[in-house]
Image (cartoon, rainbow, N blue to C red; front, top):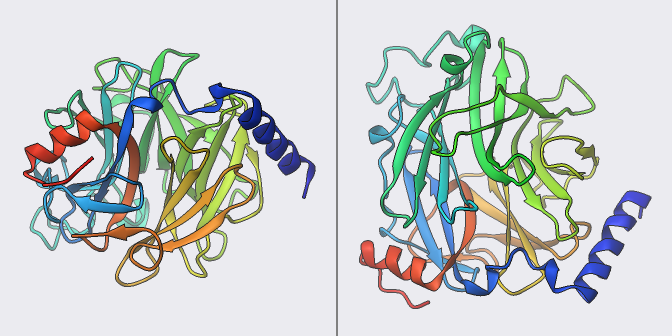
Length: 351
């Protein structure tokens, strides 16, 4: 075991053994369920699923969208939904504004929004930002990066996620972006309090050692000792999940060469979430190289050693009424929040 990994492991052992502050936050004792957001390729729309135990998930609308991508996105489709809870106890939901089948569906006359030879596959301009206090009623804004920062030649803007930056006192939006038709890299910017626009210009959050390798799909998890783990995708062979650690939320991430997923072929879209009342974190990822699509899972207590949990319905992780999810994210919710969402969609489920 190298020195960096040993240091990380020892800090976890010490903290978990001696301090109740190692819990992921003072509100964890109020949490009773898990909410999964995801999308599907055929619909390019938003789906939600609930779980009472963090192992078996049930779609709230029986495998049908809860919000149609054609109603919220400029390209009439969304991808890559991510949800988090802010310090104001609001839910922050972000999605890629992109429909990869827009021509086929009659939303545009060309394969892509702009010249694919110049801007590349799936070129788009930005994101859908939504905010809610009850998971039912949402405010919505379209953020097209190039409109806010015209000097940036944005070839794509994908996989947005949010996290609260305590030092800045703002929600931080971080995402994959390709500028001037180049390689995809990962950036961050801050949003206004109403979650309607960016208030800072995007900056690089991490650079891969090899500039010719595309990186994308960052996911940031606060560690109990105050540091941050970034999981992300590196396309240096079969695309897979790697990890970097930093003392700061928006910079200083140190590259680690190991791939931490358990897939022989390509996967993407890592998302890390904590099991309620346990010192265990689940790494979830999208296995896009298989048909039908599926999610894969691993579990860790120290972010050094990972245990393979398999795929949905091929191990301990289960779905009851949906299949082939794409690029998802999971958060903890309270019993009241889960019951309210289930009741809204007439889902009979105990929490």
